[in-house]
Length: 67
Image 1 (cartoon, one colour):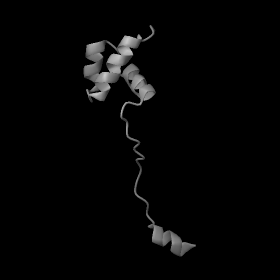
Image 2 (image 1 turned 135 degrees about the vertical axis):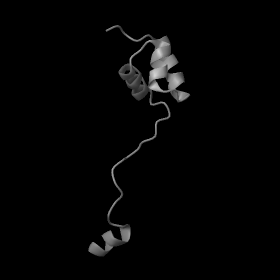
Image 3 (image 1 turned 60 degrees about the vertical axis):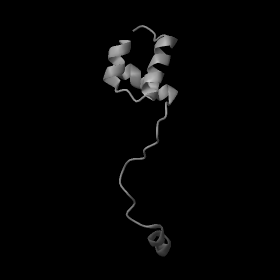
């Protein structure tokens, strides 16, 4: 594998900031989707922290009642 140039990284970062899909970024830069994802994770371009999962079954009031 060849190393990704700083110019490509900055191009990917700007396209990710503009919310382009990965396949379009790949077509413009010639990089794979995995490489683009790695660059995005390293740069943390406007990424929200989604916790995922399901909502809590107990409310704070219920938790207090248990104790």
